[in-house]
Amino acid sequence: MARATHTCRLCFGVLRRVLPRRRVDVSHAQAEACLAARHADGSTSCIAKHVVCTHPVCDLMVVVPAYNAGERLKVCVESVLRQRTGYSFRIVVVDDGSTDGSADSLQSSCTDCRLTVIGQRVNRGVSAARNMALSFIDARYVTFVDADDELPPGAIEAWLDAAYAVDADVVEGSMAEVTDGRRSMLVSHADGEDTGSLTGYACGKVFAARLFADVGFPEGVRYEDSLLAFVLFRLAQRTTTVASTTYIYNRHQGSFTSNEMGNYANIDAYWVVRRLLQDIDRLGIERDDVLYDALLVGMKLSGGRMASLDDETSMAYFAAMCGLAEQYFAKNKACDRLKYIGRAIRERNYTLYILASCLL
Image (cartoon, rainbow, N blue to C red):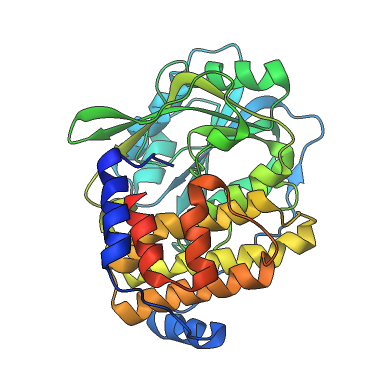
């Protein structure tokens, strides 16, 4: 989570004092009804059974979901195949009902035995594509690469060197972002940072295959990567980071993040968290302060997007999330960096929530 600048903190302090407090007393049921009227819940459980080979045939399985990716898919796959490493890996491209022939073209033009292309007839979304690949895992580790993106040289070597050195369940490297040809750092790590430094992106990491034995990505909603903070990180026994840049995120006009503001599909941020919280008890995951912080981080990240919707919907989202916090985390305490989000929930103070989300 990015740290607030000094100017943002000053603005927060001033606005918190001068803006009128807006308390939200809508019931949980009323808030959910409002959200469902704008954008219905289509989420599925994350609990799923996958075959994880006890004697894997390679070190890493690279999963690439692809939907009408065009030439970008070929560039992505070539960036993986060009990796120079002593570790063994295979690529599974999942054609998610593409109509542009990009996956078929890749399959016919690439004869590398490390590449497998599988497909589903209709477009079902990135979660379903990932889960299709996860149904049978014959590698020690798994990573996810979006068809728009690339792996820089040395990515696999850096990830797996770190993973095998400490028997890690999750390893994350630094990540770069390219926008209109300009490259900048999206995530910067030092070697061996603590668990709290991991981001919520599914890409840019390797995961121990065992983490997916009983879970998969929730389908039917956006924000499927919420699975990481609520489930995968909680199942992981050891995590680590590497300073090397191991992922290149290519931002373009048609990408998901370019169409977030004013989109009622952002309500999925509530539905996916509600479903994950229903699943954690069945998975035996403790509802501790760390899990409560995951809820608060999700609320913080959603604040600006929700504020871009109409007031009634935005306030309904806040009320519904307050209801989840009261139901699942009545006795938990927020960490210091999220204390104002926690206070907003206790006070049902919508003004404080929006200010803390957007300025801190």
